[in-house]
Image (cartoon, rainbow, N blue to C red; front, side):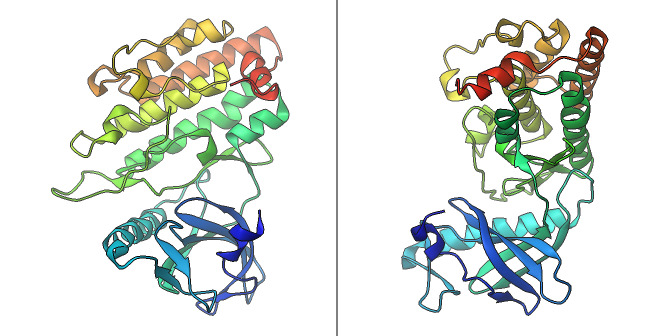
Length: 317
């Protein structure tokens, strides 16, 4: 990370709430900075997510306090900070082996922080690219099916994620996933008149997320899951919905990877329907299609995730 990026981050050994100590920057985005930290008393490593919208805010001379760049941005800053703290509240209610464990959240330095367990992992896209090839059946059983199970769990809790994509899936050393970044997540049903901050992701967000007037429900996560599976089995994401407005049709998965069964190919294509009412209505159907696909590949013998992994490792888009 360059010096300019680090200049806006909290200094090493900054203490939050007298409990959590900043050690180094792990990553950053337009809306925040993620640090490796530790509990001061126990030395236990933790991940610390700081709300820091770089376009709206800057660090004061004390190198800790966050201030608004322009006075007329205060309402927007407060709205985004509210969504950030709402993410913390949602996470505090969720307990699942494939979600990062929530530890605490707090407000300090004019901004907010979420403290999570620290897990060493690699995002799904980088994980596939680095490996080049993986056992196809194991990939389904150890990575994709647990991800579907995790989505089923959060839906039973009345929550939708709204930002399923490869960079939000962390793969642990044993190949199991952790679903991260609940910054767009929301509890259903939405309250009348409630304004929700939505961050769309090209190729992975369904059309309804581009409008506050459209219904937001579990169907949005189903679309994003289908897009993720398209990426995993084809080596590329499907066309973005904005490019499909005048021509909804996209090639079937089997045209990119004939090793995928017709059942799974149809299920993914079904999940990518532009209109919610035409979309695959159940995560259970994805689970079953993946289970059958795993059985077929296992029955054929150990083999690697062919075209998808090869395209990724060779740098094809």
